[in-house]
Image (cartoon, rainbow, N blue to C red; front, side):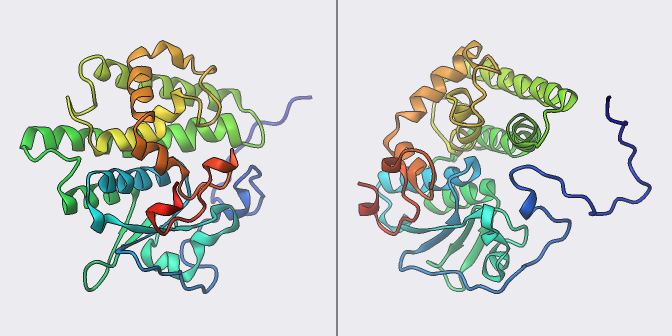
Length: 279
């Protein structure tokens, strides 16, 4: 017997459990759920995060800056367990009122500057250290084009495709088909661009590549959602070339380990407070 078609109520209320892996932390209101002060280390930057695609953007960025010789880009990376609701503590909400990782506090200035949203953090660090962001107007604009493309496109990949394909309590054919089509369209956008140039903004590796690789590069390498075969990711040959090249960068290898609590133990560095933590 088939289920009756869902009819939305006139006014939605949060009455039924939604199910799924993240149901326990979903709620229709903002603000803290509990009082807790965030830890503070000795480094200039305090990062509160988890090694999700959005989280690794920032740890990769820090490791790239350190590799470029910027010793004042040292950072403490504190683990935020989103499955346990750490992002709803009063201390975290003070830095990011949206309760999403990553969140950054720059304590190298007075008063300290809070930075939230992964794209904003990448841009803030690129401008502060004058790295991985071209200074000429055309190159800078092309970099920001792709950075903001990622920020606008990834919710369809994560909250759309990823949720319904990997995390939803029931497989919904309409939702999976809808968001798979969009995910493949986005991969085609990237494949066409990367058929024209080595990197997204041109010949140079930039924050646009860090942002997009953290989602789409990992997707085609089967590190996100275990969906590479389902999406026929091998068809996107230019994305594959780009993704594999970036995956070999030493700073990327290090950045992927920070705030990671799953997978191979030798790839997990739940918290990072100095370069020696990633040996």
